[in-house]
Image (cartoon, rainbow, N blue to C red; front, side, top):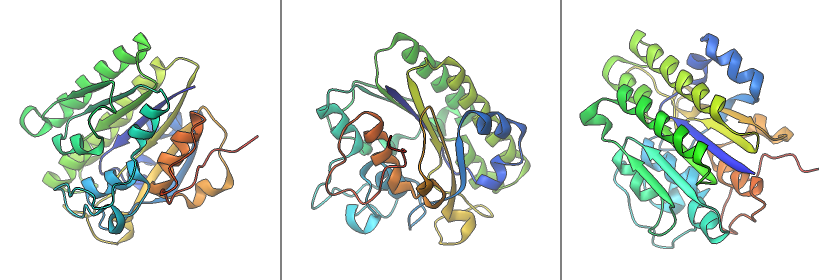
Length: 255
């Protein structure tokens, strides 16, 4: 078993569900449009919560500036590395470098989306991730697509460019799925949504995120899933016990 995690920054479920690409993704996976993120619904705190399965109250990062943990909690990539799994990161927002500790990644590839342009970076990162998946040199692949969040802040969530950015992200996601060997399970989600030209509040538009899981059976808890459940789900797919400090639960259906 290998696992792909695609995170589309700022993707709202209602935006995804308006596009024809949604039906193709839905046909390949189980889906919930009611997954919840954490407060504050800000990019870095949400990512740290995803990879450490605890709320910002516990990990301490509450803005887009990383705060070292006073009582460090084992992250997903540290757990997988200890279990002999190779992790690869592909992203275009530099702050995500703090999601893992030194020595836990087998491969990391980053662009500066702010300088180069997020659409171009997302497309290029997708190509690079596909290449490494084909080589078989990583077990867990994290692909971050930042264009929708950038479009939302510049033009507004649900604006014409935002909707185009969602469509582009779904196309990139489908390209990766088309390249996956049979041994892969996959998870597609977001860190937060957005409204107007912002996010970070507890309004439903900010707090509700999409969740697709394919390549494995899921349990009934998926309809009430939160972003904290993603790391335990990935760990179970690899047959690795979650860290005892984690608060989320696996969404895999046990046989």
